[in-house]
Amino acid sequence: MGFCTVADIENFLQVTIHTDAVKNASALRAIDEATEAIKNYCHQVIERVTDDVITLDCAGGTKLFLPELPVISIADVVEDSETLVVTDDYMLGQHGILHRVDDFWANGIQIVTITYTHGYATIPDDVVGVCTRAAARAYQAGLRAAELEGVIGVTALTLGDYSVSFGSEGGSGVSEGVLGASAARMLLLSEKDALNRYRYVAQ
Image 1 (cartoon, helix red, strand yellow):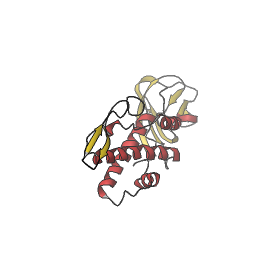
Image 2: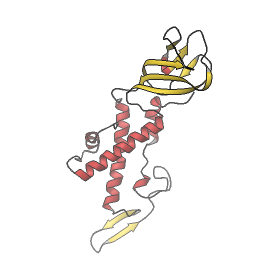
Image 3: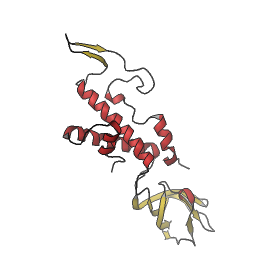
């Protein structure tokens, strides 16, 4: 599921998209691309996943960091083929930290298997906003490419005695010196700043 809708893009750009099948398909693809870019940047699924099963390496110690946040509930923990008991053997703390009670986690590769529910049932508004803006840029870049029939670097068109002017679309910043619709940056630095609160950094 995308983190925003075609209606979000329509409201943001103040245009109508959904009545045109081609434009609607282009907007949906842009939403998918923006959603995946957000997930990749955050290293998070973000949306709710129920009873997700993961197997982790463990270096011992009393803390085990779960990779998907927020953690909603823990259904099952199996350590080195032994099923652990909540409260007696482990407890879920803040920020997705699984604490071993009066013991240490086993040290080994792929040694702890956890079944848990994580993510947001409703995508947070700031994530929806970032996805909307990023998808809108990708959608607009596609429109521009279609208007120019895929020709890159066009800076001006003249109808009378038809003429075309070409030039660089920029050597730094957003375009990074790359021409064409593919040069549209998927996530801006300000948008990454907004996403940083959801970003998982490996412990």
